[in-house]
Length: 174
Image: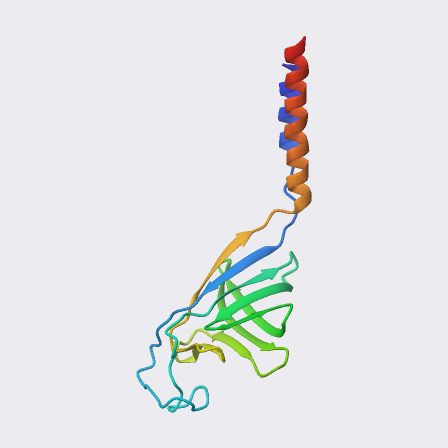
């Protein structure tokens, strides 16, 4: 009974440490833009080929507890840019605990590769673009949040469970 009481008190004292937050983005494979242009025009122009690979921009951004971007990984068509092979500019506006407006521009190293996603609240200003083959206009994607526990929290949980198991074994030997 004493072991149970101590375990209960320790469980109540344990607080999950502050953790990074991962936001996952899922774009759309189809554009709401009704203008189907000629392949090869500049992005945003009537001559631009709308999403030739019929694929969606997907990716994730990791924010630390202060809201700073610490890592990213985005795929657009045949192109994948991460914090290891690109540099990024990020702008987020949070509303009701979710990302409501965003502007992300990733430039590969070397800089001829680009991934961009932008939504400022207006459908006419929603874009997913990648030199890997994605161009979706006027159809913003969605963001989903997931928290990642700190490694120290998981270690402490494991040590606590191992201690309880060891105590039970010792008690069973008596």
